[in-house]
Image (tube, rainbow, N blue to C red; front, side, top):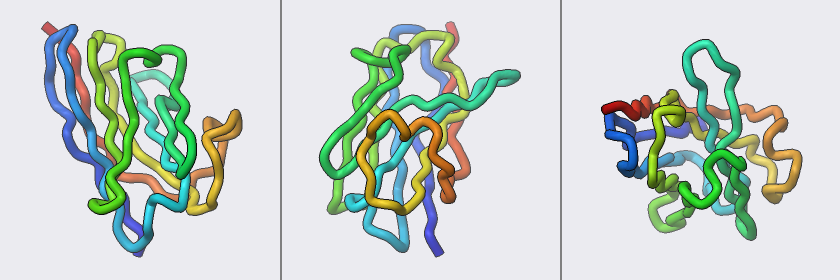
Amino acid sequence: QVQLVESGGGLVQPGGSLRLACAASRFALDYYAIGWFRQAPGKEREGVSCISNSDTDYADSVKGRFTISRDNAKNTVYLQMNSLKPEDTAVYYCATDLIPQLCDSTWLSRPYNYWGQGTQVTVSS
């Protein structure tokens, strides 16, 4: 069955960096848009970044600090997070709807059918 597995979360000080990974199985992720989302305690889930086979997009809150990339050979999408802030603390999830699409304005609101289990990112001194 289709599976997404996130890894790479942890505790980091403000200003630090982490690289999250989203490993896919049972499908080739380079055909589809993959989104990264996060949810902090007591807050709604929000979109962080998206990557398709031809474009990327970022939430304004992470532009210039986060970079999304993909390694097709490893069937994995990465989220490099630099200059981390306490407000980046959340559980981070990757998701896909297995529909070949671009990261246009709709990626934030698509009904993603497949989600990973999430990885905790905590930014604190």
